[in-house]
Length: 163
Image (cartoon, rainbow, N blue to C red; front, side, top):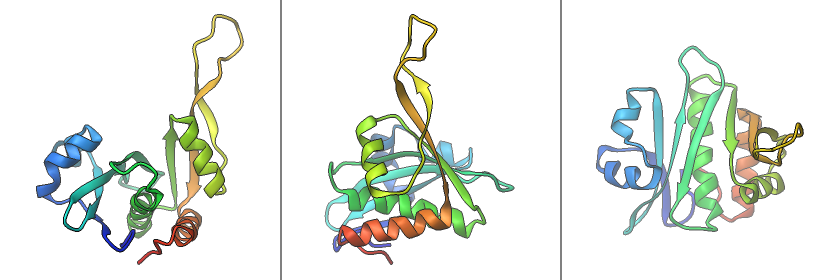
């Protein structure tokens, strides 16, 4: 899958290990044994500049999107391209839905502007009263086929297209 003219999204390869560990903070070799999968964004001539880790539970259930990291801030074609790769992989493995958690309000606002999603608060600031504190974590559940169509439209708007 091509995120832009110079950036390719592809499955993790063993030579990516050090860079993926640096970006995601997880060892993809160790984590693969636990069912995690990794996709990377590679820029021709530069190397790996982004990665995503996700889980596709055996026997069905929600695909679980983990960390998405890009060394290029504001390159939404790379970020969304990585997420798109997980959706394609999950759909091809027979999954219908996915879930992910957002812990950054600015990212949540960006996602809400670009996609039809219904984030549900799932974590709150500590409170000294009986009232909940402000939300600091949101869970988003998506239909993968719909998410893929929305990602394709978002990438098209960004001029990145999809393969």
